[in-house]
Length: 553
Image (cartoon, rainbow, N blue to C red; front, side):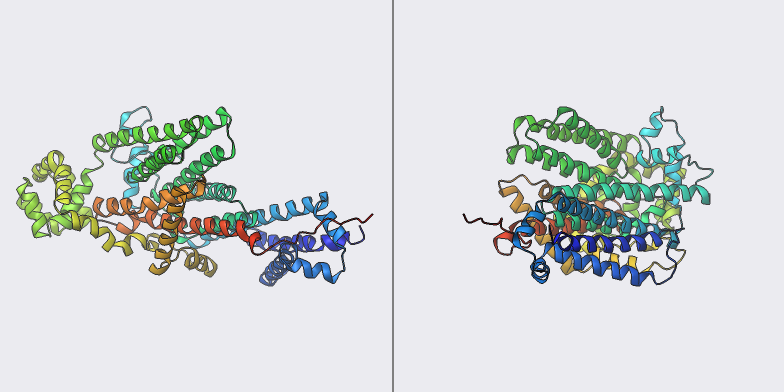
């Protein structure tokens, strides 16, 4: 072919641009110095311009201009588009684009290590104390802290004697950061697989990776608290659900071994996720309801239902077991104590309700209301003078608090909505131990991908609601629509439980709510973008299709 090199030109330029971008990404990794000059930003900008230009010349109507400029016959264009060289270059460009996205994500993720230092908290000790108990003891599995984070600390050799050591904290932070990288990379890959248009797939892959760089996701990697593991396990649970639905969608009769293995992995992930934070269980309950609805309303064939039914039953069993550990592990009393101090005793009507239910207002109990929260909690758990209050909480505390919430249904339901700004828009940067100011590029990513404007959040909710209606009323089984449905429907229940569950550190406890709202919004935009891209040929042929040559006798 006389114009073979001309037709390959845009692909080769694309590869050159990606190569320059890759050099810049490597240069920005810690400990790497491969460029002989410091003006790497210009090199990266040049690579980006070349890659974008080559992309337009290869996959947009500008391809016509390139072909016309070099007077390439239609027969050669058609032959090239069906040649092995085109397929190889096309796959290579796409593969390098994915690799470049992941490399850029990894480089940006590592820059957090230049700005933040690991930090332990007052709550950390209670998790580490559980980690010291043997795995063969029920005191490990049924304790005042749910077991996932203590299990993680036990694997890393963290104990009450060393958890404040700088080296131990750095080890925990490193493992949490890499676990986050793996979890969000898996979710990004599965989301890309769920999309139909290959360029929307690439955008989706990069978008999910960049979203995980948001401060409300990444800042927890350096802190010895449960949020980092919880968010990473959330990403893996969503990836597992989505992967299973994709497997059931793509194959009429998927291999039993693959389906059973994936179902088992998802069950393990859900168990670890649920026992990271007790409120995570309620997100799984919404997922169980959505799985049950999927089997009934979407008319899934009988041989595809058993993994969905199995996961639904597992979540219900998990709910029963976790509530058993919550009660017998004495994890719930502190929430009643905190609510008494912050919301019940200062409120005359609430106080009267609890007094009528038998709450003993002893002089010492009234006296400790003026203490700091930490001293108040210590007194409630240890002082003999407060034994009568502890006994009442043990016997009637949960039932009375639930009865109080039900006695005022309208305020109970409305208060989480009134506090939506704090629940959906929390800023947890106060928990950081900063070494330096955060790089501007990370702050820019955070501003774009973790929007805090209520208008944007309402648009996300509106588009997600439209996707939910379209998914459950449509005929097609699209896995990503199901995930968006779970993320949307679980928002308000989690807001309700978080607001009324514990009155302290509301924004930290609501971290997942804010994260899942924005993740839901971006997934919804990907769903709509994929639909638009699939319809584009009806009104805008994006890629030049050369007709085969016609031969006249």
